[in-house]
Image 1 (tube, rainbow, N blue to C red):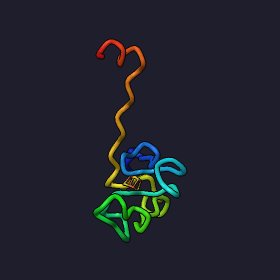
Image 2: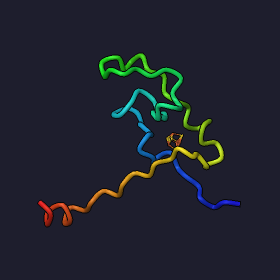
Image 3: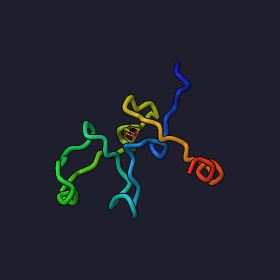
Image 4: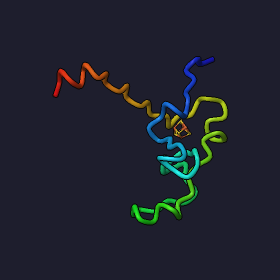
Length: 78
Ligand code: SF4
């Protein structure tokens, strides 16, 4: 049995309310029942139910977010 459990909150396809989306959901195009190609039609999109898709914490489409650089790392690179 695999121990590689994934969390939607650490996935690049996940958007959370209220700043990124109207409700917490999965925005991976293959998991969305309705997708719009243009940005101004975002309101008409229907995002995927991440709780249902990742019910067993084994979603194959999980794409890990990169770890943000610390303030010191950003300062030294800038
Ligand atoms: S359901 Fe899968 S693809 Fe969607 S946010 Fe969760 S881990 Fe990512």
